[in-house]
Amino acid sequence: MTGTTRDEPGSVLALVSAIRRAAASLSPSDRLLVEVELNLHADHALPTLTARQESLAAALRCAAKTVRRRSDRALEALALVMAAGEDEPVAGGDPRPGHDDLLRFWRLDGSAVVDVVCSEIPDEELPPYARTGDRNYLRYAKFADLDTLMFVRTRLAQLAPHASVRDFAPSEHHETDAAAVIVIGGPPWNAKYREFMPQLPYHFEPHPLGQDDPLVVPMLGSAPIGPRWTARGELIDDVGVFTRLTLTSGTTVFLLGGCLTAGVLGAARTFLHGDVGPANVRWVHDHVGDDDVVVVVESRRFAGMTDTTEIAVDGPLLALRRPRGASTFEVVKDHTRRR
Image (tube, rainbow, N blue to C red; front, side, top):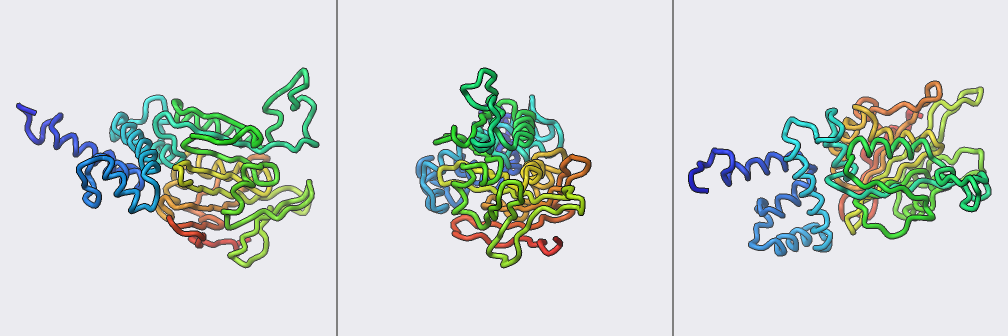
């Protein structure tokens, strides 16, 4: 570094300062991983990277390989922030405010791999052209929540054009190395969603086809929460249920559920749509951080269109969190009485 001063661009201190500024914009968990990786964290200041990773793994009560996997993604996020600059949007991505918040929330850093598992129409309800043997076979004809699938895929492509997004029916999806798995559609028609039900603090009360499957949250001790209808049978609003779970492997699972298709779409729009999505993401970050979370919203319908809930303004219908290392969820906000 001969010929440079501590304040000149290119000096070691200037580089460290730039890294710290960029890391400050990351989520708390990503910032911790980056600081440990680069030996910038006093609690894990050890001479080798392996020792630092094992120290952090012990503190987080997880495997060292989990820390290494998460660190790779955190460093990609750091590189993305530094390449974009403090005030510049990511090249090829969405330039609107909150873009980086959405990237981190949906685990879209760098060239992430994201699996989308969409609900599947039951075999007895399938149209002929949704069957592989039909001469006019259409693969997407078997997906149930197609509006939500198209919305999610479009928004992910806008946010992170370099991410690899793959879609599956539940019967097609097995083991994965994806950074994120987005499960679209509730448990009645999505077997992948059903696999996570034993870990969840809620369930959907099953009813015959053509009737509502209301949301039941046993810990509240209240009546089931379902869609609301006018006297003429027109839908006023549905219940959208957004759930985020982090697996020990490092994969983040997002469950987008609802009593009806409107609720499923509402759960997706709440954290992906326009300027409201980033604001809602920040609300979750402020109230829950990186813990597992369940957010229940009211998905209102106007002239056939699904509106987007502004959580920071109206508050969620219900928000639950499961702190890291805990086995049960706890209530963050409960506004279920307003229904």
